[in-house]
Image 1 (cartoon, helix red, strand yellow):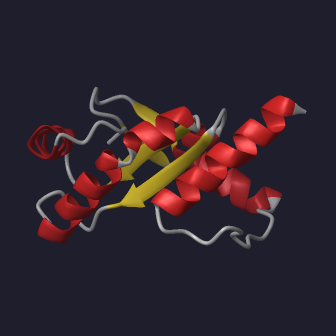
Image 2: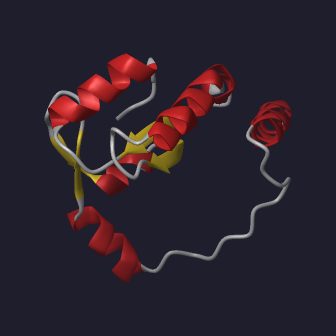
Length: 119
């Protein structure tokens, strides 16, 4: 019971740090949607493709989408999220940024922004 309240408190802290409401309303994802997501592949900085649904398979994850890796506003958002990474780590929440482009463009983006989440 004690660990549950700790996780609840860390989730609350994460939501406050990210400026999110205390309770986020969501709907259940149907099996058809889950099956479709299993077919969508994303590529890591190592060039290896994985199903997008594997990103949140074993933990909660903040998934951010970039318009493109050269976008100035996307870089600012990546910097903002990267600054919150320590709070996410304590809460056992992953951080991933997905954007259109090549693996080389994603690597350059990660290096230039110092983004420490997955790209």
